[in-house]
Image 1 (cartoon, helix red, strand yellow):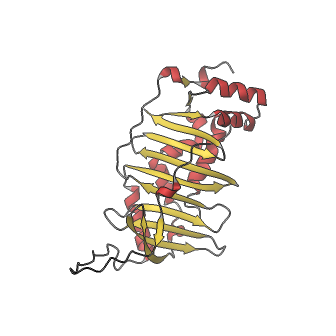
Image 2 (spheres, rainbow, N blue to C red):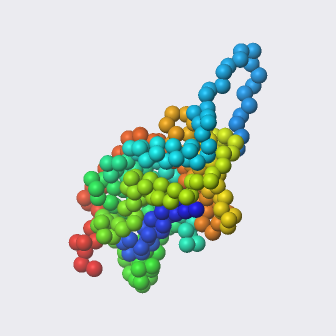
Image 3 (cartoon, rainbow, N blue to C red):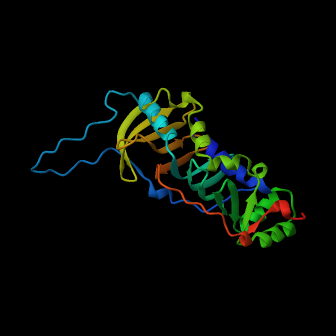
Length: 269
């Protein structure tokens, strides 16, 4: 079950896109916590009627289908998570919308980089470690890596569509959600677990375990639109957790000033 793999692979490819590496500042994965079970309200003299269950009469697979449909219709979202792909631990914290605005950061080990997309142009600003590792992964010497880090210190690298590659998918909300819905078998044969809370929001818990012992869990909002609030993959070689929030909220992304941008296409080498 690789519902999140596309995100982690794109994060990984971020490295190989420009001169080969990836990175970024760690999102606060503790902001979103799933807690099994529901809270029991304190006794009260006044009896209140429990809100109707929006998923009453639906099995787990039907709820998952409804969640994917709702999420596909979102105009924007914010995703925060950490996971592993090809043995590398990664983090992500990105807000994006269907108009191409995208802002946030990604991380690989101790290498860090911010990413920004505005007016359909993508930019990346890494820390010193990021650019040095990038140069090394691209076959450059340590000296060349240091020179690159100095050139790009505190500056944004403008990325062409060719260089951005799969990294561009991280800023394409339609591509991300399409990938989530690519393998419908992943969300067939799911079972409903106890309701939970994700960042204070009530959620239905849907789980599926495969023959290899890998478990995929989806948390679906029970209030408002049935958006996916969180996905967790555990038990395999590539575990990962991603929390989704701020659906349909505005995303502001402004291109950096020209004097803070380096365009590799205009460099002599």
